[in-house]
Amino acid sequence: MSDSYDVLIIGAGPGGYVTAIRAAQLGFKTAVVDREHLGGICLNWGCIPTKALLRSAEIYHYMQHAGDYGLSAKEVTFDTAAIVKRSRGVSGRLNGGVGMLLKKNKVDVIWGEAAIDAPGKVTVKETKRAEAPKGAKGAGSYLAKHIIVATGARPRALPGIEPDKKQIWTYYEAMVPESMPKSLLVMGSGAIGIEFASFYRTMGAEVTVIELLPQILPVEDAEIAGLARKRFEKQGIKILTSAKVTKVEKGANSVTATIEDDKGKTQQLTAEKLISAVGVVGNIDNLGLEKLGVKIDRGIVVTDGLGRTNVPGIYAIGDVAGPPMLAHKAEHEGVICIETIKGLHTHPMDKAKIPGCTYCQPQIASVGLTEAKAKEKGFSVKVGRFPFAGNGKAIALGEPDGLIKTVFDAKTGQLLGAHMVGAEVTELIQGYVVAMNLETTEEELMHTVFPHPTLSEMMHESVLDAYGKVIHS
Ligand SMILES: Cc1cc2nc3c(=O)[nH]c(=O)nc-3n(C[C@H](O)[C@H](O)[C@H](O)COP(=O)(O)OP(=O)(O)OC[C@H]3O[C@@H](n4cnc5c(N)ncnc54)[C@H](O)[C@@H]3O)c2cc1C
View (cartoon, rainbow, N blue to C red):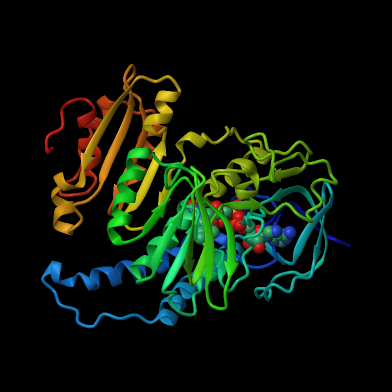
């Protein structure tokens, strides 16, 4: 007899495990299947281990500039193996934490490679990718009234520039370097590419970022991305925009990339490693989705915004269900999906209000419409700007470079978007996210009291600036 569940989730990433816990809270008999790791890419190869690496880089940077703070740190060096070990340790700890949370919530963990045979029926095959966590069930047939696909995504590979784990890296290899490369090409300037560029540059590598579009961090506001670019270039990162890697030749210990700009001019650059960071593709293969008639569009499972696919009983959430491919989107989408299954009152997530953060130096954070997008949509806008140089806390921290920009609908005063570059902005952005979700206007923001001295005061001043009332600039 097969084990039978109310809800079976394929994939224990942030989308899958959060959905599983919420399902258990709602009284569903729940199981989650994974073939490799609890916590998915996010905890094991994405969000968390990169932040651990970047923290080492940040402290290294501050130690090198100890004199700026009246301190002295002589002969500041680093140990690559120890930096990587710390990062892996942080992932391992959180991975174990997910196992404990699932157990506490009485969610069964099934270990193996899952495929859907029919609505209500899942087969799990043995996996050799990793050992099963203690107490997990193994390969076999499982029944479930509701099957949620939360299988995430993997690196996209460009033809002819396929990662080889040696000279051409994806985020997997870039996360666990055996030694720091002396030179590096980074193909793609989205959040993943820029975070690795920032890490390796801080650790001393000669880094060149190659971006196809005219702007780095292409989804960010052009002004913010422009300021970030200037800071990166000042740090010594070389940036080529409107440029395309057309060919990569591998030497014994190097790669040579042929790069073509938008005027057809080519140049060749050689480095020890190339990181391919040109996006990710959904894990939809061998799940049986096409056979069951589940609608797929360009590698993404199509859902109705509440996680339901076109086939009753089959749902999809997280990276596999489309952009933005972010952990917090996956988690939130999973909760909406399971609460919909329960029959609770839910509504589709407003993707326009999902914040995005890049944890490079300087950090970048944003929510809502960029100035250009707001204009494109026909809004007449009021824009506020406040520089870090005008903020006491930023100066005290020794972080005087950065900008907080706000975009308002000039007619109604509604906050349409907020964009930041500078120290700790990834922690600040949530203030504006709450404001946007409450459909706050400029009046309410202007009448909100911000604590002094904090970086958050710049969020207030940016709003004041949009309405001609700025104080400190
Ligand atoms: C380097 C890097 C840095 C990132 N940084 C951030 C960040 O700072 N903030 C942020 O929000 N996002 C970040 N992301 C993105 C984030 O990791 C993803 O958006 C998030 O992990 C998606 O969650 P998910 O649950 O949809 O899928 P995943 O986390 O990919 O989990 C899917 C799980 O499904 C399992 N699986 C797949 N197929 C099967 C199968 N057939 N059978 C059994 N199990 C299966 C996989 O083993 C995996 O554990 C980063 C990504 C990378 C690569």
